[in-house]
Amino acid sequence: MTAAAISQDDFLKFQEYFYRKTGIRFEDTKRYFVDKRLMERIGHSGSGSFREYFSKLRFEADGTELQALVNLMTVNETYFFREDYQFHCLVNSILPEIVARKKDESPIRIWALPSSSGEEAYTIAMCLIERWPGINTHDVEIISSDIDTNILTQARAGLYSSRSTMHVPESYLRKYFKKTAAGFQIDDTLRSAVEFTRVNLQDPADVKPYRNFDVIFCRNLLIYFDDVSRKQAAETFYDALRPGGFILLGHSESMSRISSLFRVRKFEDAIVYQRPGAGT
Amino acid sequence: MAFIKKTAQPRATSEDQRAVARDFDGLIRQLDHADPTARRWAARDLAGHPDASAALLARLLREDEVSVREVILTALMRIADPVAIAGLVTCLRSEDANLRNEAIEAMKSLPVAVAPIMRGLLVDSDPDVRIFAINILESLRHPDVEAWLIEVIEREPLVNVCGTAVDLLSEVGSPASHDAIQRLKARFASEPYIQFAAALALKRIAPVPDGRQ
Image 1 (cartoon, each protein chain N blue to C red):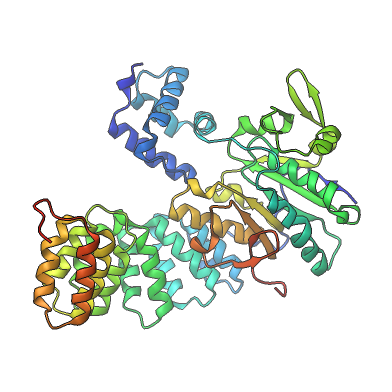
Image 2: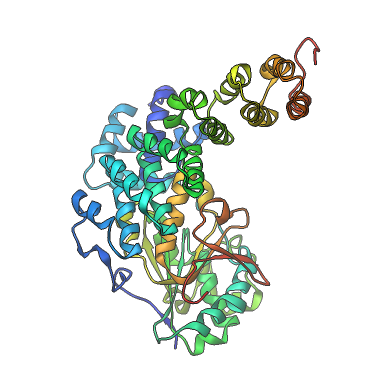
């Protein structure tokens, strides 16, 4: 294959298709990023041209090639304790409020997405153990999801670089990680605390089982979506949350600009969004 | 007490409404379900059915629950076929201010679908619709926005409509708007607001190449 193999028309065709499948739209400024990865998959699949590859991609019954492409096209960089103030908010304000209105013994359910390589979900688990006494009296389920199956495998393995762990407090690092030649291996207590699942937020069939959550972390994902996809995601979160449940977005994201379904809650540590209901 | 890790798929809710048929006809029926959650899910699933616009619009017009209205509008935005767009235009003519605003917000996100009808909206017989059309242009990502606004200020007879258009030109205008804004100023020489808004727009757009202002 040559670099000229992907024309502007090809790019537009791919852009539209990928958007419909994932809600992620690559603008012209991302041509280099997209072309490079498309070329890689075209070569890997043995296709002779973009047209041949695209046809394979669209009509392949099991979706394996689409998943491989998604894995390549999604951005996965994150680190432990990113935007730590939100985890303080979780243990200082959100969980106490959830516990106070809880009427049954069902577990508190937390959904973190995109999981990327697992740093956020494991950070939540560490914060609950280290900063929230309620963990001794309440069951908690942490589910973390991503569209990228390769990154989910990495998340389950729990092996991290020093860059990824640079904000982990020293005492936590000693307690929950083991330094190996390959990096920092997270311990089994935390690995067993999180369930990692594959989900495409734009696929109604994928998201339907995700219900009855008390808290959702969805940070720095919606910025990659266009307006309509952002609204769809917000509506998915609305139904995934229990009435009165909370959603935390990235610091540059605002639910108020996306949807009117949620109310703003200003806590001491952070601003979060809440599904109305349950006496709230 | 501790962390719980399920080995199965995440649990669906016990009052799951999706036990009913999820085919097109079943979803249309679900739009009238007594439970708003069921109506939301029906609207969400109907976003994948290109023929669902008419039924979604019909429900929108009688739906009171805000969360369901929002999902219906998003489904219409996703479908964005001529039926959906025509229905949103009908909403612009509604007496219900919420519905009008919802339609404006939805159409702002649909540049490709809205562009072919924009000129028609901007010369609609109802001046309110003409103003709403300019409101849509506020954040419509389309290369013709400035050209459409220039057309409005060149021929629109009503001062309120022209005022709305020139306000927006002060944000999105380029030197291409310069002469049209000057002519607007001259056409409404005795209207203080137009004089003010036009002067502001001229100040904000870059000077024309030959230095005229």
